[in-house]
Length: 142
Image 1 (tube, rainbow, N blue to C red):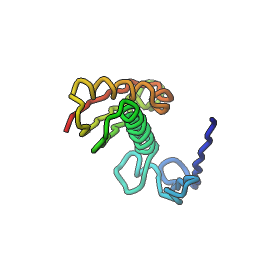
Image 2 (cartoon, one colour; image 1 turned 45 degrees about the vertical axis):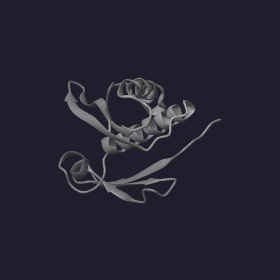
Image 3 (cartoon, rainbow, N blue to C red; image 1 turned 135 degrees about the vertical axis):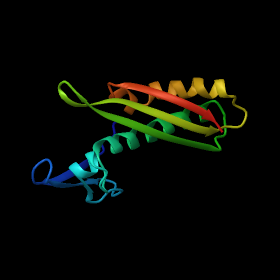
Image 4 (tube, rainbow, N blue to C red; image 1 turned 90 degrees about the vertical axis):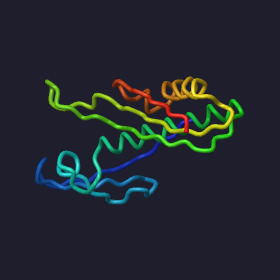
């Protein structure tokens, strides 16, 4: 199986005064604004780190759901937050980490069992594999 998904960006102007928009093939984002302000100054709009976080959290959560189902666990609730860090480094800026925080309710699975399966999901998630940064995982059984 081979799946290709796409997104596109439009941009006008320089780095600080420019404005951009991002759109996805699925239509979930259509000309959604982004720019220097939304990336560095908290202005409304999205940014690459937020989009990577959404991709990482959703990929990990789907991988975990698949692994739990394959072991016959019925998932009541999975909620994952991803915190992607952008830092100034000697070469400019770099994404240096992605921290996943999972809250889960899976009847019949204790915290240690959940943690073990979640670690496997973190390692097996295609987005985790694509990120060459430190990826932390915190699991809280709810």
